Length: 396
Image (cartoon, rainbow, N blue to C red):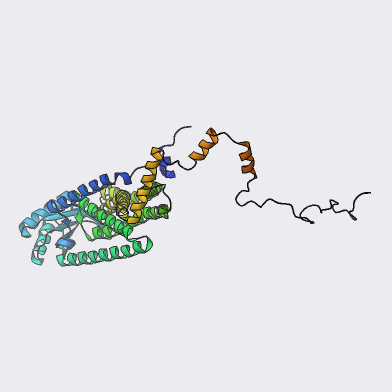
């Protein structure tokens, strides 16, 4: 019979992947990634949109030419009439009145903005009224940031309370650490790629928190099921039971993540990449990266961190020592595992007939005590042996 493949073993929870045993490797990888993210924060920073950094935006009809031509003409207009302002981003956007190019620039005052619109209109030979412009103050972006941080703090507090009530405080600490790691790694990738940070990005960050929490709760629920009453037996340590839970829930987490990543990947690679919908790329990237990282952190970080915290519990420490001591005694032959002694005796030792008879006569647990059958209609024939015949006396 052919051996089962990895996919089949994953579906049955029998892959036997040693995740917990290699937790030092995962912790080391996580530390390196955090350091790289921090390095990216310090060296590259983030490309803030005009909602956060302040600036101006100009909407120019797409009929004037290509996107590259439009960006070049706006840069020249900013150099002459915009006081040296620079173009930040340029993208094609569709609207009710038709397609147009949205050019976002650094901050210029109202007089300079009007002069830039007039020069752009003259270069393209269109009416200046056909070009619209907006000015955004950085104060609005700071207000959005403060509210997002407040929402993050409230979310983390609610999650902590829920996990403590649902599981225990160690699981709450491990889950929140996984969520924070998810945010840091996603922000690090966002910084390396250099995508513009917009309000959609902030919404995306808050969205991936819910997905990451779902992944962690799925795994922790199985861990709690496998470790319930674990100190009552000496068969496996807490880490081994948690590792089994990861293997049993791995395929479910993987399927959930793949199903969630498919539409987000379409949003990012097809919508923003092929179709050029630039307004989708900031939201699509943060969702795609955040969901992928959430799957990895829930498996490779949250549960190993939980095992690390539980191993400091004196009750779990004593249990793990008993399990390891019993295995050592079995390896040295001092203790015979259950089932092995009975089979050895059955094969090696001769059977004494008298003992076998006594053993066979001994009542089994739960069996009805042996004795005389009760007399009467339900217990058998009457004592006289006459049965149920009328006048059941002796035959003459």
